[in-house]
Amino acid sequence: MRLFAFVLLLLSALPAVASDSLIRIDCLENTGGGQVYLDNQYQFECEDFLKKPILVTAGEHEVRVVRPVDEDYEQVFTTTLQVAAGVPQRVRVSLPEKTLTDLGRQRQQQRQEQARIAREQERQRQLQAAVQQDQELAAEGDLEAMQRLAQRYAKGDGVSQSQAQAEHWQQQYEVALQEQNRRERIANLQQRLEINSYFFHVKATPRVMARDSGEGSTYVTSLPAATTMDILSIPTVYSERAELYEQLQELETHAARWANPDAMVSKAFSGR
Image 1 (tube, rainbow, N blue to C red):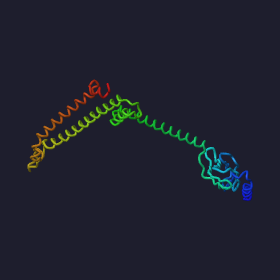
Image 2: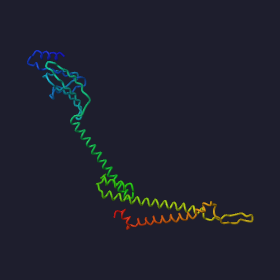
Image 3: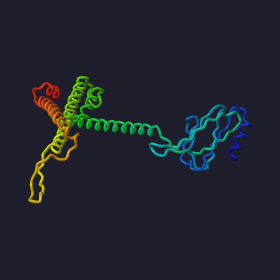
Image 4: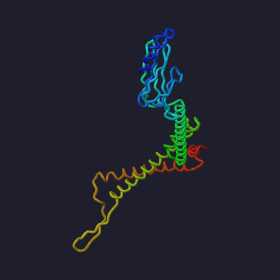
């Protein structure tokens, strides 16, 4: 404090330096090792509770204190002062939380870029695995895989964009979907025939029954108990059965053409 007062007294006593002034740097607790710069010029190194005056000219000055933490981090205190001639000022230095150095920022950017590249490579790996799986499933006749392949080729998603391939797999999908619907109709017709046959068997097949007449058992043949509506419905059952057989035969004939490698529908599905 006495040194500061002495320098101030000296300034006021010397006309040659009447345009000069003082900035006193007060290094507070936990500032030891901080390097003090005035207008980017090194001045001294802080010690806890060190107070040191610096002679300056009037005008704007920047005080910067830097304490390295490691290669990536540092603590930086910065303040700007407007100094008037003959009016001393005091700067209390308290170091903030650590921040990245220039080298630390470069390393951080490198790490972020490496992480981005790694994520992109993993995304591409997963995408290629998904494409390969779709190709394998589509070759086995999976409808959803065929449709996904058509969309992939249309958008260039995991494969080279190709309108021809997109149309090819869309056609594969539509033909396979028709065949699946055909098989479902065949299964449905077969189930209806089974129900039809069961109904006719129950309602129209004679049964042999035993009857005790007192003088011994006799056997009679009779139709099962049926309502008038049941009996009247038998011709309808015959007609429905014939219609079902006709539809089934038509579908199975079409299915046989499908199975024939020289058939047009087979060629369309196989891409020949």
